[in-house]
Image (cartoon, rainbow, N blue to C red; front, side, top):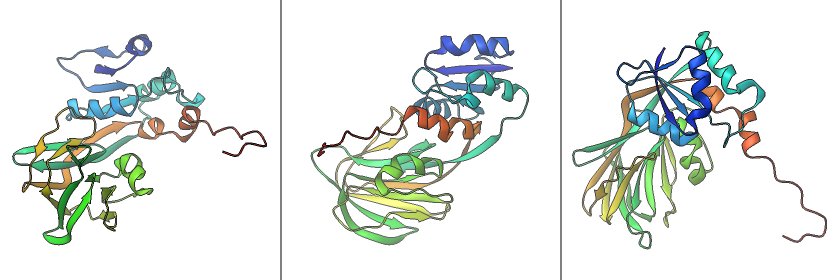
Length: 249
């Protein structure tokens, strides 16, 4: 099978791929193998939006449980037993620039010492006349377990999520229908538009609009349940050890 291999510590996985008949061929690839962490998956989805992805965590930095050792995952894929998941993306548009993301798209304050002021409309109806905070953005279902969760302390399973980062007003984070369109008007800025870990970050000036929505694009990802395995995660983030008696903090 012809593949493109991206990520880190590629010398660890190359021999295993070759032994199973995977051939690196950038001219006519059928699959992208992303070896690394979440960033490798996000970058591969952005760089190769038309190709299916097989993400495998780099065991050097993300230990794998016995069921998900690299060789086991590759054998399962070659046997045709690896599940394929279609993951809807979200996008943000300012002027003629549209950024798509597998996780989330956020409008952030450009000057970290000065808050962003913005107005929010959902499906053309005013939701908040003026919000002051660090930023606002939308997340996909997959992205709800990432930055969205750190802001809202929640996740969702359907639709798209709208989150407000460090807002001074009492505005509720929302889970909206996937057909919803959110318009953010910058009242005081500027802001910057950020999609996942993309290097492109267009400036959004005062008076400009950013439109958030679910994208018409989907990423096709093999073995997502393996990549997100709770047992593997527990190896990366072990429970803290109890403190000795007598400690106050």
